[in-house]
Length: 461
Picture: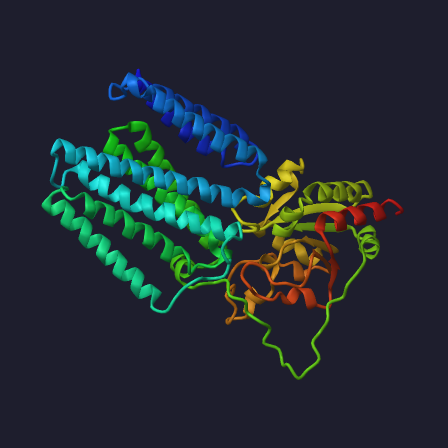
């Protein structure tokens, strides 16, 4: 019955991933995954290795997990979901490392030594789980702005990391070759892996944190799958394999969306502010600033409008106001579309989730490849808080850190309206020349308030 329960859980996980392929069925997929995990937890309680005297401690763990997961998840804002994902992913990696530690101690107590499959997977799960835990904590700190979003490093850091990798590899091989008898060596292995997780993620800028989180999520899945070998648990093995594979696929897809290699993301240190390279002796061009009422006039005279959401919209929670504005424009006969960049926001699908929360019809959402050919024929583009994903410099400026990244070609529209708090650069730290284009007007202020004022001003037309 336990094996049947694990088989059901594995099928639920696979089916859940399939449902998560579309925003229309993603919620259902989440529920299916929850049911599968609940079944896996319940049937595990009936495993012969679980002693009745341990039920109290298991109950305490379940209670702590429930309180620590349910209430923060209910209260977290959509803008903070990426850092919560990083935090939970890190806890998963840490849990796997602890499982490896205690399985190592038990193997030593029973006198099991040598490079068996279980000993190899124990060492690997300890290393990967520790790296994932430490790296995820740094990612959480950067996204939560506890740590600076810019790259943090020191002289010779890459050499230090390489030395750590060599040390961890040599220590692992020595332990496996000569038998797992030294607890101090295993603790040293965990410590070195934790340090490697910290020093590997610290030099990566905040702009690349979504890719890092996805990669670390893959690491945690691999570590959990290895822990399934250690514990002889089929559900953990299958679930970890699914997370590891899907996380790595997502990582590669995000790299493709930015037209960058994974190595470039991990080692380029993107995120330092890149100032304008214009001639300081010449007068600097100033942006054209419009009031919400002026913007309403532009929109009322348009036949086609494309709304481009970005992280600024997420911070201001302006998706409902954008939906209301779009509704009024459509009632006036204006064709309205939403253009969603694959890496807009701080996580894949971030904008899709926000717009779905506001009940924006999925049919109105256009991906980059679909919408870019339509921009030259668009009367007005309304950019709400987006920055790097609409920067024309990505097409031609080889010195820019975002060079080669596919962008939304909003600058090719007849008029571009940018709702933004200020002229500050985005996550990539690059000034956006779109804001100074002749066909661009800026409307400064909180996106939620600004869009609401534009919507109100539209009522007189």
